[in-house]
Length: 120
Image 1 (tube, one colour):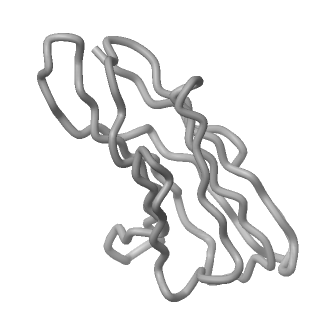
Image 2 (cartoon, rainbow, N blue to C red; image 1 turned 60 degrees about the vertical axis):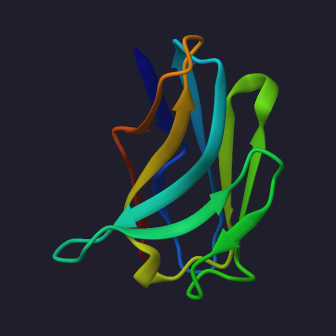
């Protein structure tokens, strides 16, 4: 069993910054790609940023230049530094990971989500 636990969400003014963290724990051998997704009310969940195990990254066009994804493989943790936040960044942010277990089973899993609200 594997758990992803997000933290760092909250209320911030436009132009402000937040740093999200997602720590994975449990029956883990290796974590391949990790990512952050978000879902705003009435909208579909969308990819915000992804990072491979060797730290190759990709970003949604809407966050390029403002958000930075990173990871610490020793801690099984992924981060999302969000700068110059806009009201349209308001959403529930979800962590996602591709897990390989010690028995080489593979699966994809999600965190429970953390709310980010950008408002004055």
